Amino acid sequence: MNVTLKHWREAASLIITGGLRDTNAVLKHNHVSSLKKPSRQTWLPKTAFDYEVLLLQRSTASSFMPDTYVFPGGLVDDSDFCSDWMDVFKLHKHKPNFGLSSVKQNPSSRPPVFLTDRTKFGSPVSGDVAFRICAIRETFEESGILLVIPNSCDINSNERFTKVIEHDQKELAKWRLKVQSSPAHFIHLCTELGCMPNIWALHEWGNWLTPVASKNIKKRRYDTAFFICCLEDKQYTEDDQKEIVSFKWLAPPEAIKLFSDKKIQLGPPQFYELSRICHFSSLRELHRFSLHRALEGCECWLPVILFTSDGGILLLPGDELYPEEPDWTGAKKPPVLTTDKKREDLRKKDSRLHRVEFGHDLTIYMNIEPKYKHIYPLLMDSKDAVDYNSQL
Image (cartoon, rainbow, N blue to C red; front, side, top):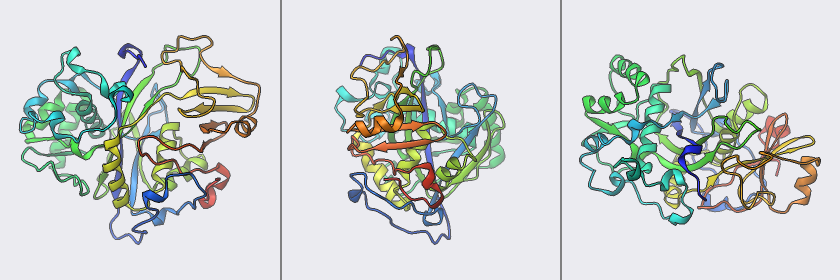
């Protein structure tokens, strides 16, 4: 795949989970080894989960996904690749990627967002580091949650849940305004407070590209690196009343239920990733899975839209209808695929399924093995959302 940076606006997104205190939730659900192939599953109620996921509601005025609930994150900034970070991470600057665990993935299949040699653009900071910095910075800007650790902190402790270091809230509020005004102030924040972004707490999760949606190929398209971070406790959260107007901490199936009831909006990536996380009612199990699975790397996903006579389908890699050579840049004519067949007819005909069908709602269909030891989404039709039962 030859994708140049000019076609994409690079971004990072962070799936933040926070543990619940005094919960009677199930401590352990399905072990990962039993979840290798899609099979009929029972959707656990929200009370079975000992953690919640942070979702932020974008402003109505937002040019991208207005009103939608998303994970914290945003566009990468030049300052995220700034050489000044070498001083912030000075105790670790001689280690590859400042001591981040090495990914086993073959470079030939590594997503460009991580593989691109940033030294060609004048930066000594790799994509693996910079996109984590971006995710942490954007999380602070949008929610007020600051994921940093003291400069002297042991970085070899990621087998445990992440704890958030307490700081004076008034001082953080001032820094938050500064970082919102200019991302470069995040470097100054770390220097002044004697801390560094806790990049080691963020585990690689996925990589989504914005699909070509219409003839308007100049529409904003993003190459987004997704990470996950398991916090020991839910954190005090405050929206910025600018880009973000509201927030919710929700158990994964609770978020799916609210979406199915049309009480919140979710984009396909958020819906898909929440459906993956629904397998884990235990934060301990989710953390363990995320920590070790991240070493395998991830697949770059460019959803391909196929409009049908009764809605549409987001085709994902591995699906029988997924193009052998997808249109990465939107240069092909027509820019989107169409058919006069119905979604169900196509589904019955095709043997390999990896798709998200859309119409009045979203439904995932998948019967292939996920790559890089990832977990498949817990599948459900909207009609089953009331009792959290799977459609499989």
